[in-house]
Image (cartoon, rainbow, N blue to C red):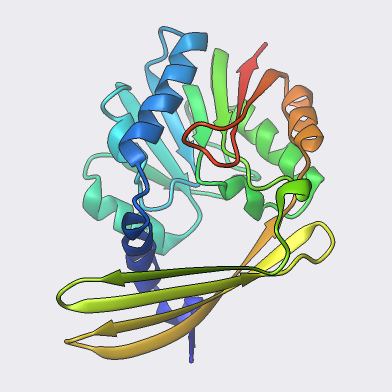
Length: 242
């Protein structure tokens, strides 16, 4: 059985395939985030997408902002983004401690990627890294993962995506361990031209409270608001550098 590391770049391809199958609405999400940014900083013209993955949101943010860039840790995700977003700079870096030579009017972190942090200390470090890259009055938008009270123990999720040449199945199981949730994922990827591949992946997510998120924003120098519902199941935190 293969793991994420041995499967390599195939994971980035499956990531796009699975979420396209789920009907993830990148255009609507990008437009909604842009509205939140512009309502707080009308002249905003530059944006950094932290933990941008394969660039699903960046593809639409470039319709609203003159200058966009991404930050991503996975080399495979960066390579996939480069093929779909020619001319868009995606920097390799860790959200907890990154240093670019420029600042932005807005910094966003979508798709609950913030949940991959391990501790409140890492959350603080991340917000401080983000704020270092903001222009005066800049806006931070973060899509959190589940709050502890919203997590469903033993949650099982499944996806089946079919095309003429391929069938991909993703099954996951989530079990809480204190303030963390290891999500164990199995993929079966069957292709006419390559046979069947089976590999596993484990996502270790943190259950931060709403108060922990808000405190991290404030310690980084931002006024913060939590917006529930809408397109984002876990809501959004919107901060403004004061």
